[in-house]
Image 1: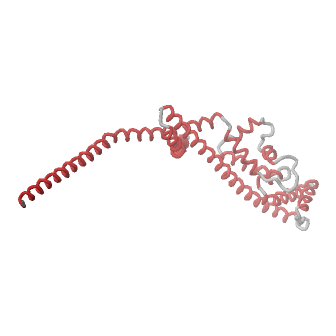
Image 2 (image 1 turned 90 degrees about the vertical axis):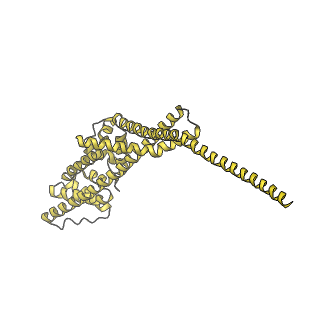
Image 3 (image 1 turned 180 degrees about the vertical axis):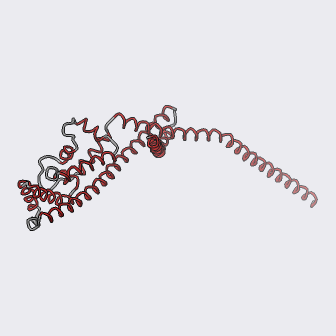
Length: 294
């Protein structure tokens, strides 16, 4: 009886061992099949990723081309830089015969131009526009009576009193009594004491030179600030436009390719986030090449 029981137990153990072996074999086979399936899909995944990278690079290049074409065919830069200058100019506490933009543009020689021609004047590199304003400032300082309002508009609040004092002393030295009284009167309205009649001609000349130098330094600092503000605004606008164009182009290409809606949305987001910076880099490379060639 014991021998029969032992034989039966032995057979059960053999059955269990066979089942475990079979199950293990099936598991290994499943893993092997899964690995083989993953390896089979790997080239397709790599191909899809390569296509996506190529699409992003292409959208960046297209965005850069659109931006450069828009700059060449429109005066959008001029619009932004003129608007930035208009908001940057200072309006004094006393009334002017005309608005500050007209005051500045008259000295720049733009008074006879049409609005479109004025925009083309502003539609240049910001450094070039800054150089034109600096040159106009030098002309204004050489004739501070006639160009007093320009000096105030460009120089800002800090330059307002200095410009009035320079115009008053210059008028006194040149014998222009009317201009001297007019500027002295404005100084009094600003609660600035006359303080000039007690000085000699030589002292007045020295004070005039010192104030003119201070006024020039103030205006130079303001012009630097204007270029920083206008440049930042222009750069931000260009970059946002490039990202928007890149995202739009990526979405259109993905849609025409019959991509699923979720993937189209992801492609648009990728075009905006990655394609935009690619276009900025492309534009920087183009500008660097242009500077080397010139």
